[in-house]
Image 1 (tube, rainbow, N blue to C red):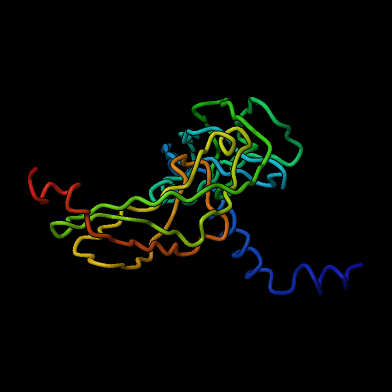
Image 2 (image 1 turned 180 degrees about the vertical axis):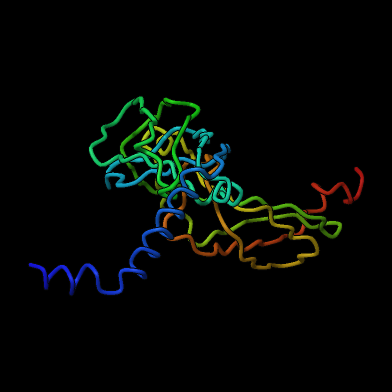
Length: 229
């Protein structure tokens, strides 16, 4: 026993005592370090959304997260360091209320969550739906006297949209970006894109839309340039 004490305890006892003193001093310095608080606005993150559900709320609030910690850390806290996470793994359709607590916040481990505003929020969930809708072109332009648009062809004529069921059902058609066909005399083709006006509805596999504008001469009588009777 004495040899054990001498070999492991008394061996380099000066260095061991110095290490203990330094560790104790460091611990005291950290525990006595000035503390501060800061507030950051961060978006709510939704994890594990079921494949058959869509968020149909048009506005998702940001949350204000107030954290407390050592001044040396608080100074450098950025919004990207904090994450407000909601797990939707077992959610069902309809209006749902979610609580936001410190358990929902991910951030540096030395920071303590003091407050979250709002502490609750409501979220509308709906079935995910897809369907095909017509593509309606928008064409404008200044044309030569005596000419007018005879026909506008669209390829593809229909596209698939996806989103919350109620929003998808309300979409009558997808529309193209405005096409300026000024100067077209016979026919001209334009590449553009189509979109649904509802921001919660997206185009599936979005690809360029080819719009072909075909012109024709206005008959003399329609144009008012024929002989007078």
